[in-house]
Length: 482
Image (cartoon, rainbow, N blue to C red; front, side):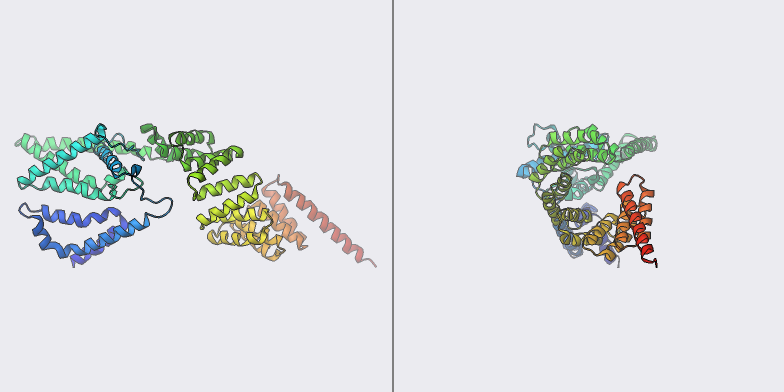
C-alpha cells in the first residue's frame, strides 16, 4: 500500500519539478549508504524490481520535458558554447565555483549570471573547481575504505540532484541560484555532520552544547539578515535588474530587462541608455534592437526606429514582436503595403495574438481591402472577447460595407466593455445618423463630447446631425401645409 502511494506521489512530484527525475538514483544511493556492509550488486539484486516503476516514470518525464523545451524561438535547450562540449564543461566548472562561493558566503547572489566560456586551467574558477572536485573524491574514497558512507551520501546528493541542470544537454540558463535549492541539502547535511563531529572531538565534556548552539545561532541570524536584504532587491523589477548590473556590469540581459522596466514607466531616455549598452556588449542582440526601436518609435523618431527593427529581423527572421513593431512604425509613416506584409508575418508567427490580428485588419482597411480585414477583426475578438478597440474597428469595417445594423451591434459591444470609450460613442452616433435616427445619434455625439470635450470630429458630427435633423423637420413641416 505504501509503495503504491509512493509511486502516486512521485507522479505528482514529476509534474511539480524537473529535479524529481533524479529520485530513482537517490533511492539507490540511500539503499546503498544506509548500511556500511552493503555493496552495489547486492542492492540491485534485492531492490531492482522496486526501482523499475520509478525509473520508467523518470525516463518518460525526461523525454517529455526534452520535447517540450526543445521547440520554438525561446527553446530552453541550446547548443554548446562555440559548438564545443569542452567549452560548456568549462562554463559548468565555473558555475560550480560560483555555487560553492555563494553557499559559503552568499554576498554576490544575482538574478542572472554571465559566464564567459574559456577552457583553460589558468582560469582560477576552473582551477578551483577541478581541485575541489578531486579533493572531494579523495575524501569520499578514504571514508569508504573505512566503511563510512555518509560523505558519499551527502556529496552524491549534491551532484545527483544537480544533474538536470548540469548541461549534459545544454540549456539556456547555465547557472541560477534556484538550481541549488535541492542540491544544497546534501552539503548542509554534510556541514552539520562535520560540525557535530568537531564539537564532539574538541569539546568532549563541557561546553559542547553551548558552542554548537552559538555557531548555529550565528549562522541562522546572519543568513536571516542576508535574506531580508535580498528581499529588498526583489522589491520590483527595477531594483532587481539594477542589482544585477551592479554585480556584473557586462550583463546584457540585465541591461535589456532594466531598460524594458524603465520603458514601461515612461522613462524612455533612461531605458535607451540600457538598450544601447546591451547592444554595445552584444551587437547582434535582436531583442535589444527591437526594444530600442520601440523606445525611439514612442518618441516619434520613426526614421531611427525602423532600421533597428529591420536589424532585429535580420538576426532573427521569425521574431514576431519585431515584425509587429516594424509594421506599426511603417503604418505610422503611411507605408501601409509594407506594414500589412509584416503584420501578416507576425500573425503567422503569433496566431493567438488578438492585437496583431487587429493591427493587420486596420492596415488592410487603410489599403481599401475591407473584405479581407473583417475576418481578422472577428479573429481578434474571438481571441480576446473584452477587446473593445477591436469591436469598434469591426463596427467601422462593417459600416463601410453598408452593414449598419451589425455595425451598431459591435459598437454597442465595445461600449458595454468600455463605457467611456469616446470614439465608439462617436462611431455609433454616425451609424445612427446614417439610419436617420437623429435623436439617438445626437445623444451619442453629446456623450462623446462629454467624455472628450476637445473631440473635434464628434463636434463636427453633432453639428451635421443637428442641421440634418432641422432640415428634415423643416421639410416635414412644409409638406404638411395645406
